[in-house]
Image (cartoon, rainbow, N blue to C red; front, side, top):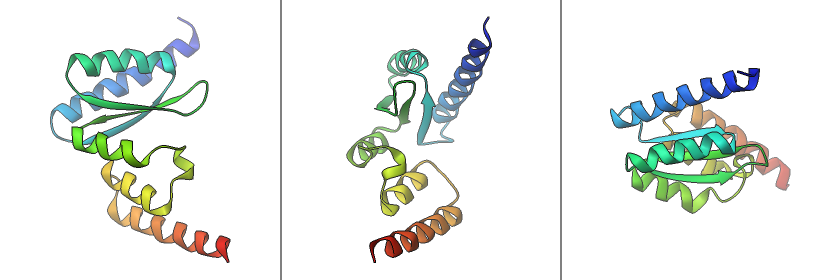
Length: 122
C-alpha cells in the first residue's frame, strides 16, 4: 500500500464509525470531507443502508458528504449551496448546531462572526 492509501483507510474507518454512531442514535447529522473516490464508496454504503445523504463539491480533490436523518439532510440542502467558509454567521451557527457541536462554543463563534461582519460592512 502507498502512504496515501493508509490515509484513505483511516478516513474510511472513521466514516464507518460515524455511520455506526448514526445508526445507534448518537448523531442525527454527520459531515465528512473526503476525496471523491472515498465519497463514492461511502455513498454506496449509505444507499445500501437507506441513509439519506448530500454531496457538495469542495474542490477538485475534496467533497463534503453530509448524511443522517432525512429532515436534517433536507435542511442542509436548502442553505449549504456554497463553500462552508462563505456561510453567513446564522447559517454557520445552524449547521454547527445540527452537527452537534458545543452550543456555548457555537454561540461564541456566532457572536464573534457577527461582530466581524458588522465591522466589515461599516
